[in-house]
Amino acid sequence: MTAATRKYADFENLREQAVALRREGLSRRQIRDRLHVDNNDILNRLLEGEPPPEWTKRPNAKDDLRDRARELRTQGWTYDQIQVELGCSKSSISLWVRDLPKPERKRTPEEASQIARRGWEPTLRRREEERQVVKRTAAAEIGAMSERELFLLGVGLYWAEGTKDKPHARRERVVFVNSDPGMIQIFSAWLDLLGVEPERRKYCVMIHETADTDGAERFWGDLVGVDPSTFNKATIKRHNPRTNRKNVNAEYHGCLVIRILGSVDLYRRIEGAWYGIVGAATAADHENRA
Image (cartoon, rainbow, N blue to C red; front, side):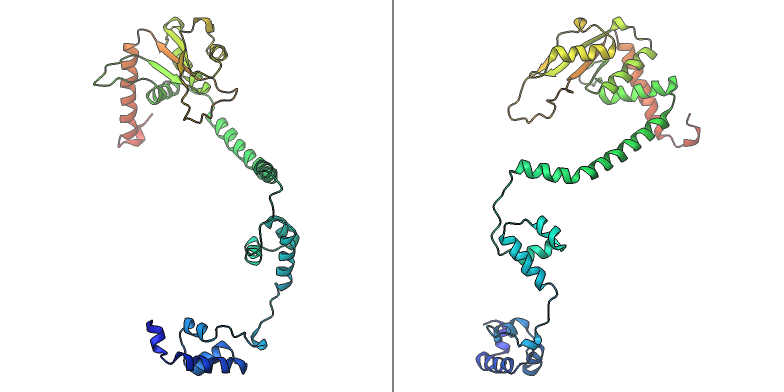
């Protein structure tokens, strides 16, 4: 016996009184006050099976909507269709019809996805337009780039994406690998700025085995202005069947590897310049930065 039940030890007698009062037309609140029952669970048990008197039933303005929603649901309508028809929320519809069987699926998941996407197309177009406006504005703000700016940009670009020397494995050589054509163009312009001769630049493609290697070499050759027949042998990435690759469309060209011959001094210059950039960026005297 729970503590709440022990408080009302003579439960059956109390229930008889509650039922009698209910049949006289008293509300739950009136019965609670009359019998001094302040526990809702006990009150529910006392009145179990006894319908409320008519005068306590408040008219519900949504009764007609509820009945109509149930009727439409039995006809196989979806929540979206009922919402459009009746102009009420999905949460209300769910509450009203959740005990009814779901209608049979008339569309495949792919068809349903296409329909949903069509509904989103105006929003997606608006978002894309906003995205492009921000990009165009940011691009226009760059303007002309000085040689110093290009030099600093190239150093940071290489330190992020290029091969670096390690204390346990000395590799003082310049090797740059990237799949972004824009990154390759900037790096090539940076090499031009530093006077690195074209004959010191060696290229090869790093690409997945299922992709078009010849097509990739033509693409990168056109980008850097080099005959693809002069490329070194491509590095082929073997397929892992457990990997779900996303880069499988016609825009995939693998990565271009750029190796600079005789680049020990160039590498040391890059590393030194990078540490200079770090020191300048973290210096306390921000006003004297140039």
